[in-house]
Amino acid sequence: MQAAALVTALGLSGCAPQFSNHGYIPPEDDLELISIGADTRESVAEKVGVPTSSGVLTDSAYYYVRMRTRTIGPLAPQEIERQVLSISFADNGVVENIERFGLERGQVVPLSRRVTTSPVSDNSFLRQLLGNIGRFSPSALGG
Image (cartoon, rainbow, N blue to C red; front, side, top):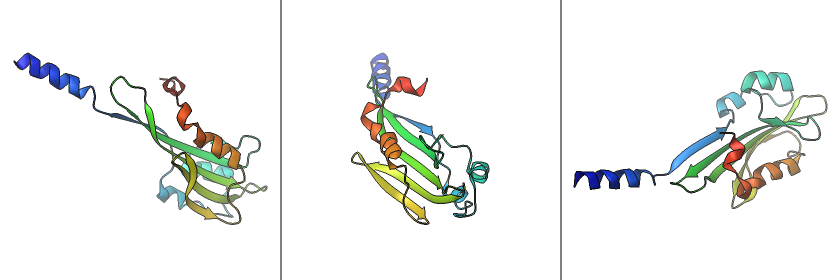
């Protein structure tokens, strides 16, 4: 009887969801240290850390990416949240915009903005980065 209860308990615990976090977005307190119009690429890297990636075609922005996945039993991991923090730079290398993006029903949605002029100009990269929600592969995580 005890063996059956143990097997049942172990079987049910294998179906409990497992959550996993990947990537890094600096906390709001650290972002408050960045002054729009004054800080440069180097000072941003010193204050909040090295970014996950930068602008694809130009060095126009730093991108910090974080995602959260859920795995239930033997099923493939499912992405449940993704955020991108974009810090844009003007041509002279000074911070121009700080924006945070997320996904809502598969659409890119700005979550917060500290903008001097216009939103991020490298929008196509953000859409590619956030748009891969259905193409997530556990092997891409490298472990």
